[in-house]
Length: 234
Image 1: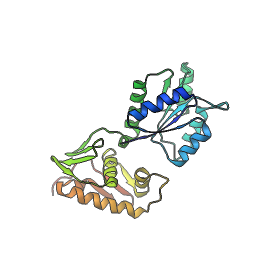
Image 2: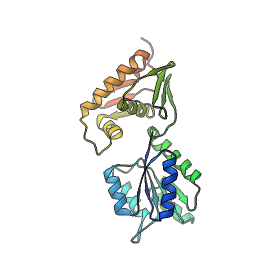
Image 3: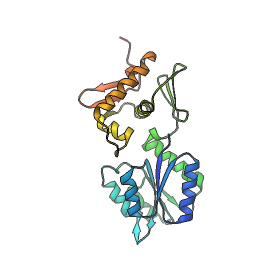
Image 4: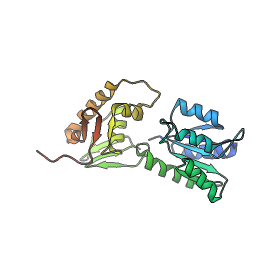
């Protein structure tokens, strides 16, 4: 899956290096040089992960922006990797205490950056990675956009594919319709709740021949849950 990453870095050479390496790795990248531009980019579309420089223009700091993002419900869980030339342990602790998920000291290698990014996405947003997923014989390959069960391909529409991949990477958790709308369509797109039900029906229909439709359970009064295993035969 093509994850969306926001790079907040005001040093042009460093920013170009980061952006080019992320794009070569298949990520969708946007960039900002300061706090106002970063807030505008986040307001327009919430990224899957943010790379945030410590020192920004106009005597502002990434730490201040990060504290603000962590106090907002919409951005509270967004993975943030802090980038800085500050190598003191006290600086690292300040960044982590402010809400950073990881802390990278400049200069760093592109390979290390990509490894850190992938680790954060796998931990916080597994549906945005290209890792293969296998749930009781249902095999999901995000890189090839392929679903198979018992060796047979299953044809799905784009929304149903994203929905199944999201469910499979969050098996056992219950999601409301509103949460699914936010995760699958984005918080800046208006889609009605009943649209979720329509795609759930289409997904169940596609999975029915292999018997995997029973993995998607309706939780009355709440939403939907994806099982980790098939229910016992009656």
